[in-house]
Amino acid sequence: MSKQSRPEIAVDGFPRRGRFAAADIVTSADHKVVAKILLVGSGGFLFIAALELLLMRLQLAIPENIFMEPYTFNRILSLYGATSIFFFALPLVMGLFLYIAPLQVGARGTALPRLSQIGGALWVAGAVVLYAGFLWTPSEAGVNPLPPLSELAFLSNNGVDAWLTACGFATLGLVLVAIDLSTTLKVDRAPGMAWRRAPIFAWAAAVGSWLMLFIGPVLLAAFTMLMIDRNYGGTFFADGAGGAPLLWQHFTWIFYSGAYMLVLIFAFAAVAEIF
Amino acid sequence: MTPHSPGTGQINTLIWIGFFAALIVVVVINLGLFGAIRRNRGGRGRSARQTRGSRGLQFRVAGSLAGFAIVLFVLGIIFTNNATSTPQTTSAGLTSYHGKKLDGPLVIKATGQQWIWRYNYPNGAFSYYKLVIPVHTEIEMKLESTDVIHTWSVPDLAPKVDAVPGKDTPVVFRADAEGEFWGQSATLSGQAYAPMRTAVEVVSPERFEEFIAEQQKGIKAGQEAAEEIEAEKVKELEETEGEEPSGGEEE
Image (cartoon, rainbow over all chains, first blue to last red; front, side, top):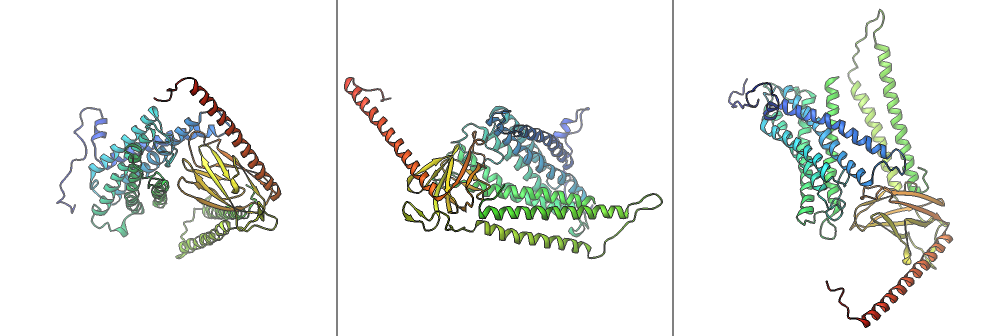
């Protein structure tokens, strides 16, 4: 233990009182516990997303099907888009990175454990907002809510706002996890664990968390701009008033291409690590 | 998809090249994998062989795959470049329009709106849902939108193009066969997105001139009828105003 100068941070939650473990899970800032929240949650959302996909394919099984109303289809499509990317794929990747990479490089916990804890909590809050929003006023703007369709003029209820809030919470949470992870991998590697000796999965975690740090804020900026457009009379994506609908597509192109690359880096690194 | 224009022919060829390239890669890799398993696996009285590749093996395999990918990439650039190049009007196409010689493409404006396509031809004629174009003629279609983003997609004739509000997106194509081709919108545009379809009828140049004349006659008749109704309404309104003092519209 060469890092004696670093103060010990209590990250294991409150002392256990009785057999009730939920308080431990909620208050723990241990990276393994936060990662487990992300991983278990993403497993659940994989199931839910598959169910939504099944419903949509049932509608599309034959032409002119009347299995569900057009607006129901659009609602499920919007829900599916958010669930599959923000609540299944990205938390699976970031969760496994957060669980395994600090152990692989021999770090004692993570560098900024409370940041990961807030990140996990924000992600859970995002999931709650998304599904609560679906029960009250769902978004009908599709997988990627392209303005002008997602502007107030065309979808005037609060569905798109709820969708943006939910995915914004989730993205912010994953960005916080990425900050924690990239800091840990930079400063908390065990003595002698040079990058040339680090396992490939730890490499992927470092690259992936830096990538998340790059693409996440871009998406958050786009979400904020659309929220301003919808609620405070902004014209970022309104044509004819100085804005451009294509601006949104450029922003989300950066995020979604980066997100697919993140999943690919994760998958290749996992395969390379195992075999 | 059965291509009926030079551009979509290029795209179709590229799709098949990509398909067979992928098929070859998948088959070769899997044959190699199963062959290696068969050769090296253990069995009765024979222990499995642990093999190690020679020193440059990884680079040779990765290099050949990268070369393959580069060839495909270059092919893709060549084909998409050909697909988007402008096809000229041939002698069998529409060479004159309304008595005037047609230089360059026939320009048609396509407007997407929730949830129907409107086509504006030169000289003021227009049609909804169905686009009628002359065969063997260079068409320059300018896509616009009045509300949200729509995507015009007629796979047999032209590449997909977005109609974005506030922008004027052109697509150039030439139909080389007469007939009717289906198309549909390809970007979610709201509740009636699914039935927002379109059709392109490719006809002979003579029939196209006839169609434009018919449309203009129909539009003129419609406008006259509308004007007549308008005039009647105005007359009625004047009569009622004469009878009693109005005040109904001041709210």
